[in-house]
Amino acid sequence: MAESRKYVFSFGDNKAEGDATMRNELGGKGANLCEMVRLGIPVPPGFVISTEVCVHFFKNNWTYPFGLREQVDEALKRIEITTNKLFGDRHTPLLVSVRSGARASMPGMMDTILNLGLNEQTVQGLVEMTGDEHFAYDSYRRFIHMYSDVVLGIVDEDESPFEAILDQIKKARDVKADFELSAADLKEIVHKFKELVKERTGKSFPESPAEQLWGAIGAVFRSWMNERAIEYRKMYHIPEEWGTAVNIVGMVYGNLAENSGTGVAFTRNPATGENKMYGEYLMNAQGEDVVAGTRTPITISQLQNEMPPIYDELHRIATTLEKHYRDMQDIEFTIERGKLWMLQCRTGKRTGMAAMRIAIEMVESGLINEREALMRVDPNHLNQLLQPLFDIEKKDEAIQEGRLLAKGLPAGPGAASGKIAFSTAAVERYLAEGHPAILTRIETSPDDIRGMKHAAGILTQRGGMTSHAALIARQMGKVCVVGCGDIEINYKEKSMKVGDLTLKEGDDISIDGFVGEVINGHIDSRPSSVVRRYLHGETVQGSQSLVIFDKIMEWADH
Image 1 (cartoon, one colour):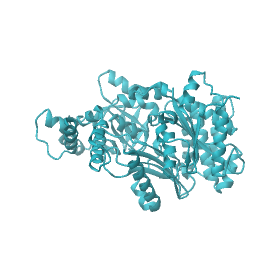
Image 2 (spheres, rainbow, N blue to C red):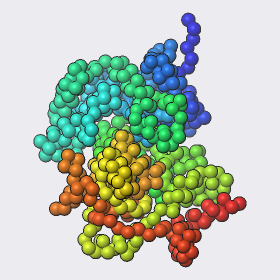
Image 3 (cartoon, one colour):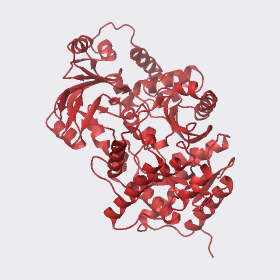
Image 4 (cartoon, rainbow, N blue to C red):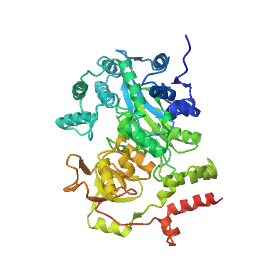
């Protein structure tokens, strides 16, 4: 029998079949997981299905190359040996996550499924293994929700039908947070989720873990060609023929107990460039909770008080990774019952201001040279320093008039005024009429990518500084305020309530991405300090952006 090519690369237990140089085959996520294992960093065991399989999949009518299934089975066995768990087992079930990973980082553009392998039998095994029925059914309802969305395509325009069921039961039980629901509530949710799947698809939710796994692998490959991924590739000139890899990793659980949690951190501040670890986490949560923006997380500095040894270890790993890759890193981690696991590292997306400050400070510390620093600054970064700011007097006047509506988290610096737009279609409509718009969402999802691109600014009711909205806004250089809990958005009525005041779609608001303020009405802006100095010939004192701009220009002249 002809031997098949190698399509599957395993990692874990201090050994890895790939490394950081293999981005083309393994995608950024897979290559970096292998590299972290080689650096002795704690990473759960897993394997990567190469980008070559994705290319084959689309060229051959959604079929897989010869030998792939056997290689996947073999790699799954390795995870079973390392973890002492068995995939699909009634007593010690192994669950896995299935995630995409292209050569170039495309945050949130493709699909992720967690807790794969759960069914009516294995959920009982999870209860036996952990002694925690609440955790087992919480994991099960999350899995059904993600799998139904990603693989079965059960999605509605504005709100997920699964979120609607969850909210309905939370209301009935008079609780605010998911984790306040009882195990009995979660069982009821699982039952209702399955009824919804049957109603929408005419079939029962798949019980076979093998069927679930191949369903998820196919869905991740197909997500390379979904609308939002295509839109993102156009925006950042990523070739279609690269394809994506699929990463399958043994689950570690941030929702297992009070001493479990999950978070996202940057080795430096991605908005300002300050050399200080920056990020957010949630206790008793799973990874998607932090980046999806459904709960507003806690800042990473709090982890130092809550779990000092974990914070110290995370800080040590962050420093190691930044030195190793010689650039600011964006890292995802999970804490399972007091043990830290790293789930991802990649070069962090940043604002123009942050890009230049980080480049300058890395030259000063000897990590990179001036030439490398200049290569890391693209024209769009410089352009961000030329954007206008609010006229301070006009803004103060607005606040004194009582027009300050709310405060959120300042996720993307700058100043923007425009019409409230609750959808991409509304943003594009106002733009066609010659009006800037502020994309205003409960939380953004990757499907909002076009609206984010065309909006003057982005405002979200939920989510933190590392949520999808914040990440994409910084990369695009958009003004962004997130986690603005005082506003209440109603998509059906196309309205936004703040206290007793109701604003409608089309009303003007202003957002300040430096401090997170949301102000009613339009505020005049003034040119940035760089424009005032070089185009208007004014003397400008104490402007950090001017100092940074001058330094980059001086190096460019060399």
